Length: 82
Image (cartoon, rainbow, N blue to C red; front, side, top):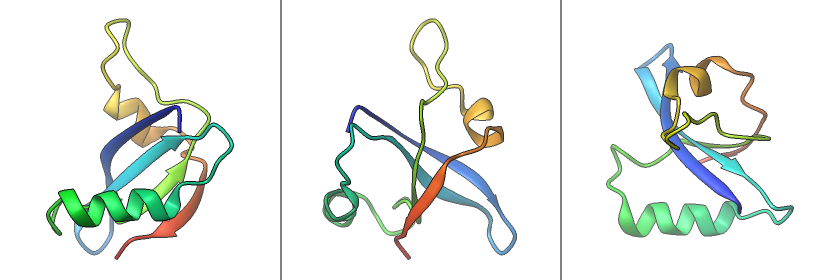
């Protein structure tokens, strides 16, 4: 895993839901991400989905551009953590 970010995306039922964006180095980490989420994050903040993307948009200061991350094509969805 080279990079990861968590953001909210539109959800018809809840308004927004939490999604983890992952830039992979070729190794799939679905089970590891699920395990860390279960151990360290409360159920209300736990990502409901993992999406693998080519890159996470960042500012020149290195901060995540959350609006760009929400609006960009987010890659393939591989895991549902509900």
